[in-house]
Image (spheres, rainbow, N blue to C red):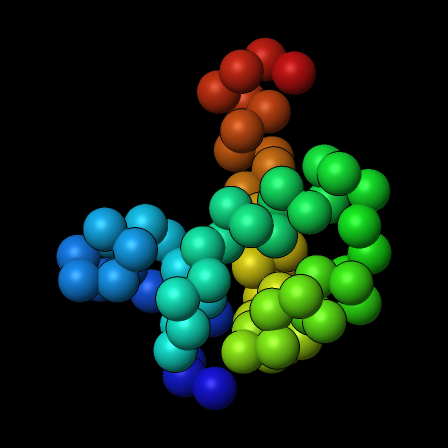
Length: 74
C-alpha cells in the first residue's frame, strides 16, 4: 500500500478522490455505509481496496469531526 490511503489523478475517474492504487472512488465507501452494507461487503465488492486503506480513511474522517463541529456549530 502507498503511504497515503487516497489519491487524486485527473486521468483516473476524472480526478475523483480514489483509494490509492485503484479506480475506486472513496465516495463508494460512504455510499455503501449509507446503504447499510458492512465493511466486509464493501471489501468483497471492491477487492482492489485494502482494509488498511478503508480504516485509514475512516480515521481521517474521525480526526476531522471536531473541526467540522466547530465550523457548523454542531
